[in-house]
Amino acid sequence: MAENPRARLKNYLKKNLKKGYTIESLKWALIKQGYSRTAIEKAIEQIHKELAEKAPVLKEKPVISYLIIDENDNPITVKKSWWKRLLE
Image 1: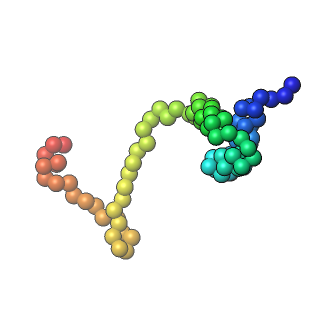
Image 2: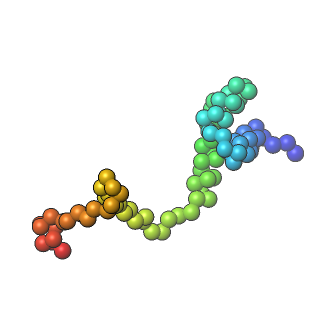
């Protein structure tokens, strides 16, 4: 049983994305091969939806930390202003 054209496009895109090609380069390669832009866009949209469904859901927010260093790579401690210390 033959695949429909949209399934072929999706498989082609998935296979080549895994190889490291960009969506943009694959889109232009398919356009040059004679595929319509709308068919390519729909296939890309479906791939994005499938990947979004498989993506893990983060349950906790990432903690952002920063360190201020001087020109000699020594950490600098920044004192809180007096009014912020009052609020603690």
